[in-house]
Length: 116
Image 1 (tube, rainbow, N blue to C red):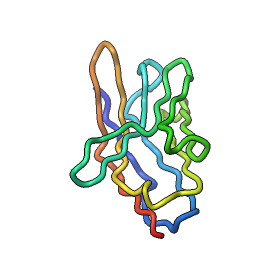
Image 2 (tube, rainbow, N blue to C red):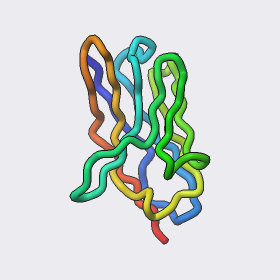
Image 3 (cartoon, rainbow, N blue to C red):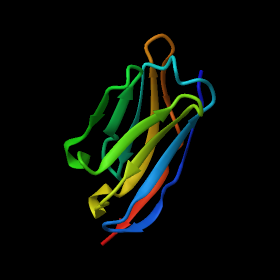
Image 4 (cartoon, rainbow, N blue to C red):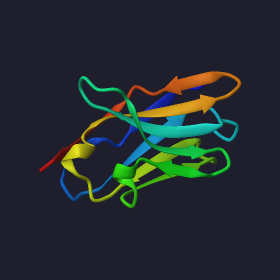
């Protein structure tokens, strides 16, 4: 089991930056992949960025070059640095952890609103 707590969301103007944090209740070193997903009303939760245990990173096409995911194993925290934000980046951002042995875990989400 692992609990995930997101923080760092807020209201920002287009072109601005935010950094989201996802703090895990235990070591993330053994978690196979962690990521950030975005959900907007009436739509499916979609992957924004994922980082694997081996350090490989993956990004949705819409955020490539603007967002950076990173993991701090010592702090049991995953970050999503977001630059050049656009109104279409607006949504609730959920942290996700996947363990092939114990399952999938979600945080409670943090709202990001980008005004035009």
